[in-house]
Length: 313
Image (tube, rainbow, N blue to C red; front, side, top):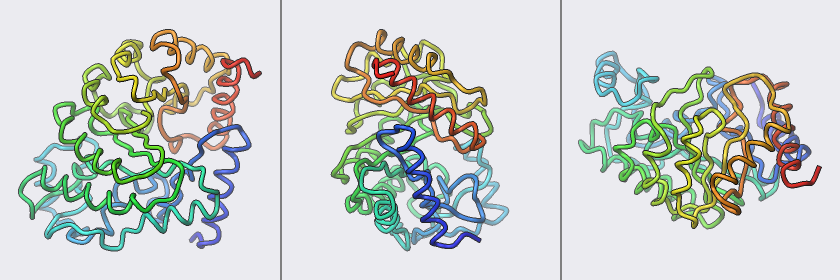
């Protein structure tokens, strides 16, 4: 089992590799969530849910059945927990997690937190009796934690709403509650799922424009490389008050993009969206499904393609 020191060393390596390749705003690879019992998924859901007070993690057969009947998540048959009492932060300590990453890698990192909407969708509620009340409680708990984070950027990750646009208003309210509590650069990442190279959620960016425009963030981090061209065109309607981050590296396939391909993707996007609209280029989502050798080369292609487009290479 990894020791605390080996986890710190791994975090340092992950961040240094990104910086050596030329990444401007690295992450810790979400190693702060590392769980030896679930080493691959890195706890996008369970890491946040299990420590909270008011939630029971042990789930019985009947509760499995109830959750399946809700049909809130087609890719998850078991709830992450059962809400039995009012939610509290319990032993969740994102402040300590962020401090450890900053102490190891410096303040100029992006710290990622799963959206309260996505977390709420994984729960079987036996207490509130109202999804909006549950969502408010979750967002309040997360907001209290992120207001103390001392890093350059907070990114909220949401991979469920693209397939459930009818819930956009309630999701926006919850996400904004968390964003408003943070004092640095605020980003929101959206994708259509990243499991085994499969697209989990159905939907388009066109159906989410009003939702995106209500977010009180500084920039968006959007899946686009694995999406149809119509999705790129739809983003012209995003308010100019929000900087666009576009995915130019496909994380669902193994072939390595060439720098020319990345440069072309950036050029095509800027022609479509307008000069100055794109502030960030990045992978569509996390690299956790790909082999390390593939990931390293995709990161290199990302930076080299960016530099080629900017005339720096």
